[in-house]
Length: 207
Image (cartoon, rainbow, N blue to C red; front, side, top):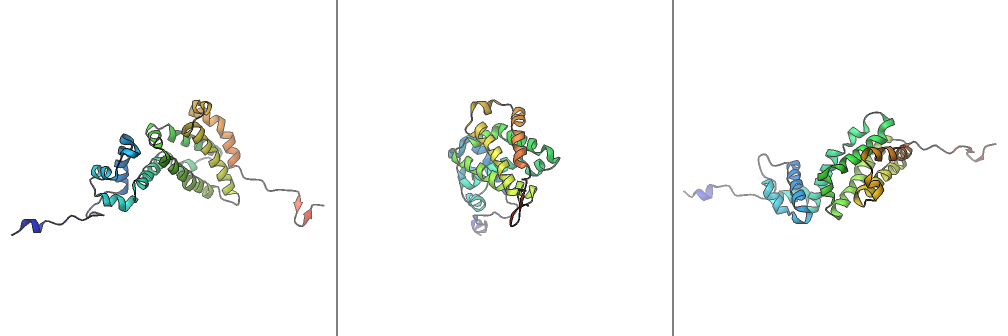
């Protein structure tokens, strides 16, 4: 009897049984991106470290850029939990948002990931637009929710840019608590409901 014939053939793509989850692959990839950088990390290296076929990574993430985006999104979601930030007293929401952003960027591993170049900057833009802005619009509600959320994310984006991505000496030198104190009033104004124009009646001026 030919024992070799009885051995099951190896299949590519999604493995049978209990395949590694997206999260486990992202965790392995995060370690390699931190160790080797974006350019020094290959999908084959990630597959080898995760113990999976490279086709499985292509199936889940499409490309190295897609995998890196998931790593960054995972890191953002872990450190800046929007659901938790939006809970609590609405009066202190500006402070919580600023603390969440500075807390994320003060994390050494996250800052190492963001040093990977254009790929990192693109993911951060997408996160601010698709996650934070969209969630704020939903949370605020009302006809002016988009304008208020846009103003708030603009303030937070300015904090990210001037403190971390392209730091200016003064903003970069502020302790997180001082950044909160300085920026909370501007963020509170950005989040405030817009007042409707008064004094003009439909069809002309008030008598």
